[in-house]
Length: 140
Image (cartoon, rainbow, N blue to C red; front, top):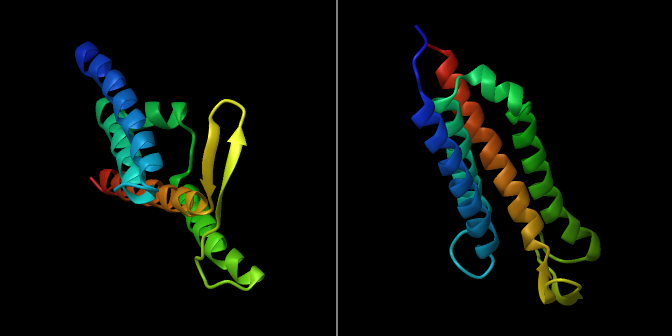
């Protein structure tokens, strides 16, 4: 007999949307307030782990066909290349540049290279955390 997890699945879908939305807020708020790539990545990973817990692993893998080891590697690569790129213009490692730009929808907006570094950190954290959780779940 298959268990009836309608309530669990319904609540999980809503909770994951809320968690991922909050993750985006944490990520973008990290430039001027506490947050950023690390905590944003951890909260995305927690939303993904919630999906893995509520649904079976194969269902989530079929709907999100991502190899999280590659996500982690790409994240580390982005973070390192962001730091190294400042060396090419004679600045110290991980030096950031920023400026204000007039974007069509957003108006005057500050854009900084630190966001690229945060993207790398977030991807590295997401990939590492989900890979660890999945490898622990497969050992049973």
